[in-house]
Length: 288
Image 1 (tube, rainbow, N blue to C red):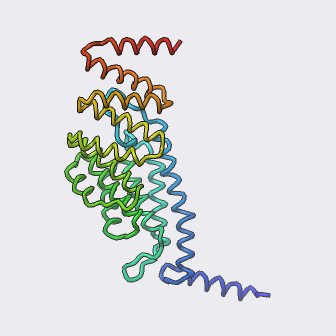
Image 2 (image 1 turned 90 degrees about the horizontal axis):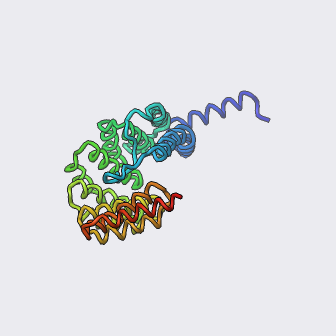
Image 3 (image 1 turned 60 degrees about the horizontal axis):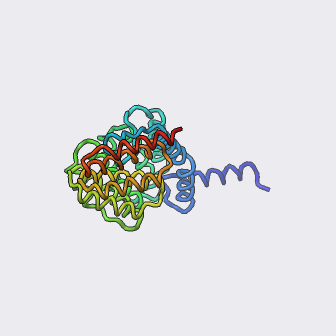
């Protein structure tokens, strides 16, 4: 049987072994496990709750070009949850970072920095978001975190109307798998649109859609593709894509507006208002 003295000695040994100043098997496993399932997990839950709510309350403006990305319109809407995510992530870094010879041995530290950057992005504090993202890009090597940080840095430049720098940054990014290729095409299409390069925006959107499996996201971007064709005055392709949205979507507002847009592009080609009038009459009958 262990005496109380022996138990205390074992506890002290383990505590010392798990110090962040000791880079050993026990320390690395302890800090990797604790970092992941305590502060990092809780911070991520705050971020996920904010993102979920953003999607729920987001209102589409169908009379304008749809936003390529869904985000909050007001930077202070989720300040409480996002500040907690930043606080928990900073705590995670301070308590669990194990650095030896310039290398980080706790694999959740870069994720914690990314959570901080994401929180600042949603708070619309783009200066702090960019500072954190540049630190991640210059310090860490994990491909998943690096790719996400680089994409978010491009988004920050877009949000601050620095499309020139957004273009410079995106040209540095290389996709290493289908998921990354999908995200890269999506943001490329947005930059091309902002640069009024509608042709290339269409091509990148089509590539993105070919890789997107999520039905809601695919439907929404098919609507964007139809809008891009409409801007290009390619009314045949605009019509076909609005028609696809009608079949794909279960959202009443999206279906309603797709039907109107579909009728509108036909009338533009025919230089009449007959089609849209007929569509409106049919929708009124459907309502009854």
